[in-house]
Image (cartoon, rainbow, N blue to C red; front, side):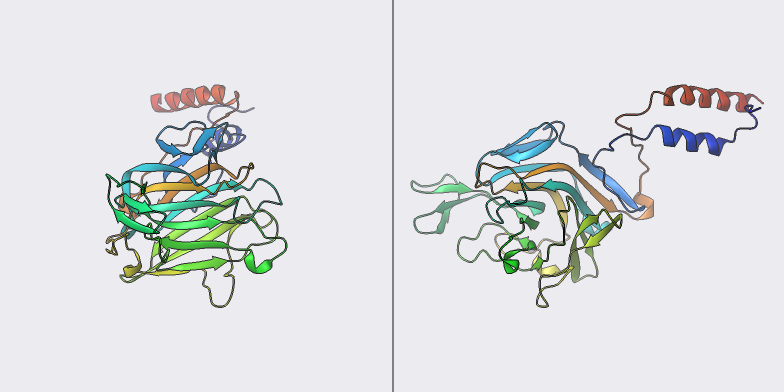
Amino acid sequence: MFTYKSISLGLLLTLLGLITLPTKALGQFSYDANETEIFKTDFDNSDGWSLSGTTINAGKIVGTSAWGTASYSLNNRVNLDLGPVSLYWSGIFPSTNAHRENDKYYVGLQYVDNAPVCYNSSSNTIVGTPLCPSGSSIVDENAELRVAMRPRNPTNVTDTYHQVYVDPGFDPISNYSPASTRLNLPAGQPTDFRLRVSKVSSTSYEASLSYWDIAQTAWKIFDPKSTLMSSPLTIKASDWIDANGLIESPVTFEAINLQFRKNSTRNSEITALALTQVLPPLLQQQSITVPESPSIIGLPLVMGFGILLKRQKQK
């Protein structure tokens, strides 16, 4: 017969952990053991998001107009000098026939808040800063490490790729990127992705894009599109520039940015997102995750566990 003495503390903890597992964990991403979670959302609300041409509803974010944007400002800048940073998300294209340009979307980590400029589309030039003269409009694009997620082109393999690149900001002439690579799409339709960026040395960084391989239950890095491309993407310290060419050092991320091309009636959507960092041991913080849908059996066990601890302390 089982008694309080015969049931070990470890067994109770194990049972408690098993029965209180949620049916769907928030974000449902697989982190490495040494990652500290900074932010996560399953888009059950729009708290903290700045939306323009986008909407958050029913557990997803979608574009409502062409080039719609969404930005979430982090409470504290994330300093890349402290350890690798990973941005996770779940993204779904509208169908297997989604158009590679019309239905693409972007995910980015912002490292500089550029000042807005006035753009004249007739002359294709920047004509100053706000207040803008007649015939021009305000363009506000910030510097980011960015991923362009493009649906597969079923008739053109060459035109099938995702792109990881450093985007300093708005440039109507050359659309210059100091570091960029194109990645080959794997078979199937992966929906969970991870952008990981890390500092390799005082002069070099790496950014890798991975997808969750369901069959292997592991993150798999995307292969480069060709031998002329690289995966991971190598980024020099001098590549972290803003729209004026000034180098950002140290590299810190201040916001998560999303953008939807939305050039059709269909919607690409993002249903979950998370940001983590591998911190030095002294800065790591233990966090408690509250399950979304714990079993009701867990409550009596928690109460019983409390009674057990109380009896043990009274001995």
